[in-house]
Each structure stands twice: as structure tokens, then as C-alpha cells.
Amino acid sequence: MVIKLEKVDVVVVGTGWAGGVVCAELSKAGYKVVALERGKNQTREDYIGVKDELRYTNRYEMMQNLSSETITSRNNLDEVALPVRTRKEMMAGTDLGGGSVHWAGACYRWTPYDFEIKSKTIERYGKGKIPEGMTIQDWGITYDEMEKYYDKWEKTAGISGEADPNPLAAKRSSDYPNPPMKESPPIKLFKEATKKLGYHPFQVPAGNLSQSYTNPDGEAMNACMYCSYCTQYGCDFGAKSDPLVSVIPTATKTGNFEARVGANVRRVLYKNGKATGVLYVNTLTGEEYEQPADVIVLAAFTFTNNRLLLLSGIGEPYDPKTRKGVIGRNYNGQFGITFLGARGFFDEKKFNYYAGAGALGGVISDYAADNFDHTNLNFLNGGGIEMRQYGSGPIATNKVPKGTPSWGAEFKKKSVHYTNRSLVVWYTSANMAWWHNYLSLDPTYKDDNGDPLLRVTFKYTDQDRNIAKFGIEKSREIMEAMGADIVDEDEVPQEFDHVYDGGHYAGGVIMGTDPTTSAVNNYLQMWDAENIFVIGASAFPQFAGHHPTETVGALAYRASEGIEKYLKEGGMLVAKKEVSTQV
Image (cartoon, rainbow, N blue to C red; front, side, top):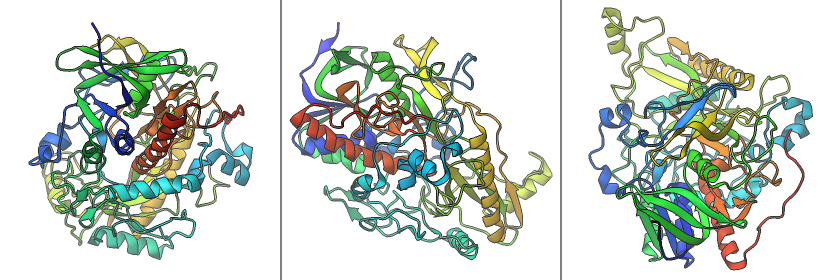
């Protein structure tokens, strides 16, 4: 029997940056907010002693257990999708704070071009530049409209950084709240080389704090110690920008907020065009609960947001055969082909790999977005070129030049010699949306509750391979300028290998102005259900050439503003425009 609970103003599914921001903003405004988190409760203290490479980098202890729920994956429409079985193949966050706790910390604003990509591409190059089958579209919001939300999120998260010196960089209303992180010798080498090549290097904007900081909500954060345990780890020192040290404590202090852990949401309850609440199961007892609310916020991982809407029958599922429908449309993200570049080996230089941080690095934006002429290029968009000093662990990082045997005396000799003597430069290429890349419910495989798994249909295109080749060439050019004695290029894969290890997956509940090609408006309010707001990377119509977290955070502030307005006034916040943005 389902236990019906007392109604609240807002129920939020997910407690990462997307859900955390909403919880903080609405509880501060006086609304009663309940957040439902599938995983367990976590605090900063729970991550003390987690500096264990074997447990976390190699055995993925912070990631979701896929034995009870996973996804299925295929490349083509006529294939049978198979389940992704191991955490090495799919790293999805879990527990309070979600994937925002184990992230590296790279923080980039997306560009004006990214938000109006279709319009600006046609304006500069003509309609013929967009290939047949590429379904990119404008977001229904501009960078200028987003700028204040970017600024607010940076101040909440305490981002450390410096302005992009590229004259084509988007304008900012204020500086980052903290100065950039330290410039280590490898970063200095990268910056010197790129400057000589005529580029505009700057420090990677970081959610790893360069100094102690108190944000506008009064949450205190510590300075990063460069311990190197960021990516795939929780920060025991409170020096990484995550919901556990920022928005969740802020929400809790109001007295209007409850984080309910061990709550696996199975359905959004929906009737006559409006949602009435959510149905969830207690993962420890198996009991089912109905949580009624005036507003339902889906702020979970991209896969979860899409699956819940499909399971709940809300919105028209996308059909690739007719190319109609919206839920599941324009699946995109960052994949193995996204992070390719060149590795340099130095015979006479050594670097201190012991120290590092998730976003300690240098970057250029000269080949990002439309900052360079694409007239004679066989791809759209671009990406940042980065060099990071993560603080590489000895188990996961044992690089030797290509052609070295994988075992034996020569391997041992080169492994020892090149320890702390190699650096990598990569291109974070953009990923465009295509009609054949989408999300749907799997017809065969189910989870422990008997619900269909989410099925991912995704394949690489010439666009993906061409932009990757371009990025590798530019990365090699920079590595050679850095003085590497040996430079090895990454190889471009011909097809997606069903490994979801980056955590940056998007689309399926995308933004826009036309309800026939988008699921939500620019407040992340669903066209088909005015009291459902779907927040997170699931709203991205396509993926820009930089990391997504800051855009997720900014959109959450935009959505919070819309939700508060809806609670006061009701109705649709943005008028529909029945003009298709599809190619």
C-alpha cells in the first residue's frame, strides 16, 4: 500500500548542483521544500580518509551501483541494446550531493554562439553549413540573459579564476570571486608555448578554491591544499565547490528544507495536464510513498530525468523514424572522442605529479565555439585546448611512448624513466545533436522494481571525427612548442564503444521556443505540464566545447526564479512560438 504524505510546496528529485540550487533558493524564499535522493546521506566528514586510489580511481567506490539499475546502449536503430554492467563503463554519481561531489572542478561559461548556434551559424555561413540530419537549435535564451545567473553561481560556488584574455571572449559583469589557482611549472610551460604561437592562454576557472572564502549565503569554504584527490573523490577539507559545502547547508539552515535520502523516485504523478506529486520507494524497507507537491522539480542526472518522464507518460516520446516527439530527442554530451589530444614525453624535464587539483591547469579558447573561421572546415563549433595537472596517481597513470612493449625489461625501463616526465594537451570538442542519437525506454531489460531501463542510441558522425582530428593537430602543435622530445597523438575512434566514463551526458528534455522540438521553455518549465520543471544538462539542445557544470548551475538559478514566479502567479512563464527550430 502506498503511504500518502503531507503536501509540500516543492518536491525536488536529485541533490546535485541543479537540485541543490533550487532547494536553497526556494527554501530561503519561505517555501517548504523536500529533496529526494536515491543514495545515502553524506557530509564532508564522511570523506576523511578517502585518499585511496585503489578504492576510488580503480574501483569507483563513489559511483552508482549498476546491479539494480543501469542503462542499455546501442549504436544503430536496428541493433538490440545491451546493458552497461560495470562502473568502469558508466560512472554516475550517487548519494547526497550527487555527481557534483566527485567532479574535478573545471568551470566554464558557454559562449553567445553556443546559445544561438543555429541562428549564428546561418548568419555567418548560410543554411548549407548545417549538414542534413544535424538537429542543432537555439536555446530560447541568450548569453546576455544568462550572464547574471553565471555570475551568481560563481559567487555561490567560490570559483577561482581569471578572465579569458581572448578579445572574442564573452563579456563579464564582474571578476571571479577568488583569484586563479597557482601556476605550476607545467602550466607555465603550456602558457609560454601557446603565447609564442599567438594564442591567449589563461588559468582554468576552478571549483578548487585558491583561498579561504565565505559566499553570499554565509557558507565558509577552505583553500585547496593541492592534494590531487579531486576527480572521483569527495573533498574532506571543504575546499572543492560542491553542494555539501554550499547550497545544501544553506537550505538546511532555513528550517524549510528536508533532504530525504534512500528515496528512489519511480514516477511523477500526472493528471489532466498537471503533476500532483511523485511516487518513490524507500530503498531500505521497500515501502512506497506518495509525496504531493504544488511544483515538481526533476533535477537528477540526464538519464534519470529522461527516464522518469518516459515512465510517467509525460511529454511525447521522440520517434527517430518520424523525427517527431520531444522526450529523448537530441541526446548529446562528452564522450571518449571528446577528450583527444597529444601526449609529450620529456627526457630532460621532470614534473611534480604528486601535487595537483581537479581544475589546476591552463587553457586557450582560440579554437572554441565560433572564435575561428569555419568556412573551409568540415565541422561546426570547436572546443577549449587544455593542459591539466590533476596529480596523477601511480596505479592509473603509467604512461610510456607508443611502440613500447606492454611488459618486460624495456617496459620497466621506460616506465621508470618517464614517470613524472610526460604531459598531455587535449581538445574538449563540442558534440552536435543528430536525429539518430536519442533516449528511449528499453523493450527488454528492467530494473529491480520491474521498470524498463533507459535505452541510449548513439553513434559518432563525420562531424565528431573531423573536429577530433582538428583538435589533435592543434594539441600536437602546442606540445611540440612545449619542447617534448616525443609526441604521441591519440587515435580517433570510428565508433562509440559504449563506455560512459565522463559523466557529461545531456539532452532529451531540451530547451527551446517551439513545443514541437523542445520539452521545456527557458525557465526549464515543461510545455506539457506547467508545474513540472526539469533542470540540468538534460536541457542542453547540443553540447558546447567546454565542461557543463557552470551552465547547469546557472540554469538552476534561472529556473529557481521561474519556479518562485510560478508559485506566486501560476501559468506558463513563456509564450509558445510555433516556429520550428529544426533543420
